[in-house]
Length: 200
Image (tube, rainbow, N blue to C red; front, top):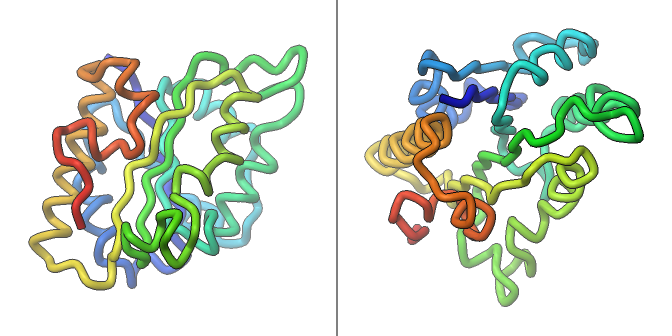
């Protein structure tokens, strides 16, 4: 059984109904550590060594966050900049993250159609996540496709609950090694691994 670390970053979590559903679905699962950056570091003073020790203890790292300006909230970006140090995460002697898995769990107000070549945003979310894909490559990690929830402003409570169940199924499936590695690295969305191609 693999260990999963969910690095959660949402500056206004109390206003995000969908993230409240997602957090409730995964918090407390066996072998899953939930780590809320904005709760721990409201002043952005990140304890680098503590974060590195936490990363070293887990096999699968999930970055759960809303999609801010085609990227991530500022505290999560600072966390990446500070914690993934040269000589620890990458470089000749930086091997602490080698063979670990990384992916994003993202919520966005934009629709699936908006994140297509012909759509308003011109690029897909996996394309916009290439910098994280490259970060994983540099650190000798395997980068998996993202779990994504689109159109969050229009979702009903029933739809949010369904996505929360899907998210829980993905996290426990990874923990319990239920997915094929070829499927994990080749899917466009992690959502597709539970036989539910993205439709909203």
